[in-house]
Length: 259
Ligand code: IPE
Ligand code: IPE
Ligand code: MG
Image 1 (cartoon, helix red, strand yellow):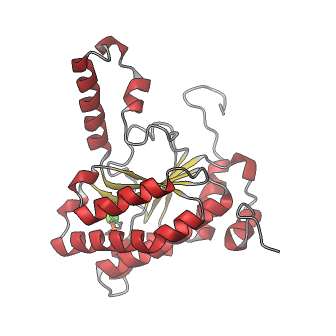
Image 2: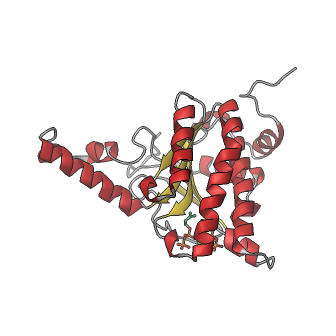
C-alpha cells in the first residue's frame, strides 16, 4: 500500500514519536538561519564551497521532513545582503550552487506540492538565477501544502527600507494617508505579507545573533540555537527543536500563556 503524502514515513515519524512531539501543536512557521557550512568544511580540511554543497543536502532533507511533518511554512536564510562581503570565489560558487540546486530540485518540489517563494532583493542576482527563481514561484504558486520561502539577498533592514519606499509611494499617489500607517500596513508591504510571523527561529552553529534576519517578523518568535553546524543538522535535531518549542510558554507580553 502506498503511504499517503501526509503520513509520517521514515525518520521524521520515528524521531517525532520518540521526542513526544504533539502533531496538533506544531509551529505554523519555522524560520532557519542555516549557519556553519564554512566551519564544517574547514574543520575537515575542505574548502568552504564543499561545506555549502553539504549544506544544500541538509536543506533538501529538512524541506522534505517539514512537508512530512505537516508544517505549513519554512523560511530559510540562504544568502544575506551582507554575504556579498565574502570572496568573489565564494559568492560566485554560492550563486552557481543555488542555480544548480533549483534546477535539479524543481520537479521533486512540484511532485511534493511544495510552494516555493523567494524573499529578498532578487533584482541584484545573476539574471539566470532570477529567471529560475521566478519560474519556480510561478510553477508552484497554486500549491497549498508546505510553503518553502527562500531568503536570498535578504536583509531585515533592506526589507523595512523597501516597505517604507512602497508606503511613501502610496502616500504620494494619494492611495494611502500617512495617518493610516500602522503595523498592519507596514506588514503588508514586506516581502511575504501572506505568511504568518515565524513561531520558531532556529539557528545552527551556536552564534547568538539574528544577523539581519526577519527583524520585523521575529518580534515574538521563540529562538532555538544549537551548536551543531548546518551540514550536520538532521531530522533528529530538527524534531528536537520542535519538541523544545512545544515546551515553551508564549506570553506575548501578557502574564498568562496566550495561543
Ligand atoms: C552559512 O554558513 C551559509 C551562508 C552564509 C551562505 P557560513 O558560510 O556562514 O559558515 P560559517 O559561519 O563560516 O561556518
Ligand atoms: C547568516 O549567517 C546568513 C545566512 C545563514 C545566509 P552569516 O554567517 O552571514 O552571519 P554572521 O556573519 O556570522 O553574523
Ligand atoms: Mg556563518
